[in-house]
Length: 195
Image (cartoon, rainbow, N blue to C red; front, top):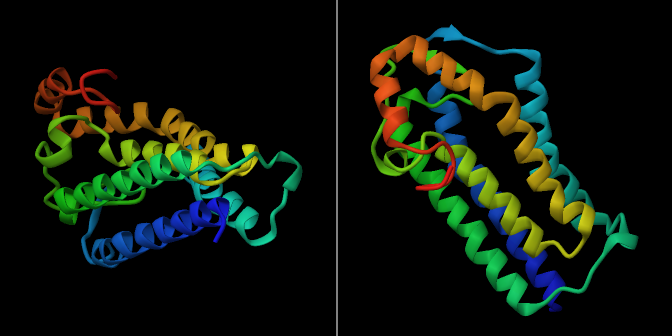
């Protein structure tokens, strides 16, 4: 197996892990009543961008080698770094889902008996789910030896993050008021201790 094929295989395993982690929470969430929804067109664009950048474009590349003209050499060190970062993303992704439990939602929604979560990864950043997507994008850039497909994940993540994070924080302030305001003062948005 070539180094490039190893990197792509690790990426495929990571995407499978992403789905395996998310699926049971998606099923459970359907059983919990939504009391407030802030779905919007910009949110749909953000979610679609993340899906296209983190799954569709690299998946298409791995399956077809298109666009081959943007390939670059794959290195063992890059595959190792990519694997560590990508599977760190899956660890954060799983921990985030576990902490949210019945509060989890793919869209901007408040569920019945919704509580402010501030433990686990939420003790360090307000949006660890986005942190996991950012890490997935970074891992993908190291694992997929193609400038377009490799970097598509970071672009998809960035579009989702910038279209959605302000709206999400406004919603949380409306629902939890001073409790969320205090939580904002103690945590960073995306990267522990930095941002």
